[in-house]
Image 1 (cartoon, one colour):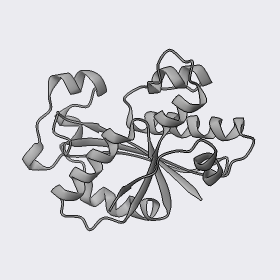
Image 2 (spheres, rainbow, N blue to C red):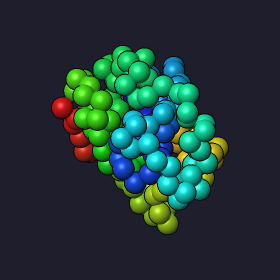
Image 3 (cartoon, rainbow, N blue to C red):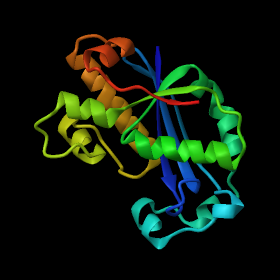
Length: 186
C-alpha cells in the first residue's frame, strides 16, 4: 500500500488560494516519488497576504507564470488515486484540497487520508507539542519549515519512523496498531 504525503502553502486565508504543493510518495520503507510545484492561484483568490508571505516566502512574482492547480493535479492524479493520502495537521491540507476541487470543478477521486499529527501524538505522547518542526527535530529529520516539499517529506519520514518503531513497514499495520482515524474526501 502506498502512502502519498502532501503539503500545501496558501497565498492568503482563503483555503482555495494554494500557491505551492509538495508531494512525497513512499512504498514500504522507500520514498519512490517526490514532486514540488509552485501554483498560480485561481484569479478569484489571487491575493498574497503579507502574513502568508512572511511564513513561506512565496511572492506573487514567483507564481506569475506557473500552472494553476487543475493542470498540476492532472500530473499528480495517479498518485492520489493509488495511495492513502497523509498530511501533518491533515484538516488544513484536506480542506485546501476540497476547496481546490470545488474551485476548479474537478471530478476528484475518492481520497482516503490519515494524519501524521495523530501518529506523532500516539507515538510520542510526552513530547512538549506535536508541531511538524518539533516532531521532525525529535527524529533528527532535516526540515525547511513551510517549504511544501520539505514539509511533505518531514511528515512522510514521521510515518516511516513510526513504522520502524513497530518493526514493520506495512501501512495498514500502522493504521491498525495506532488505531488511526481515516478520513475521506468523496
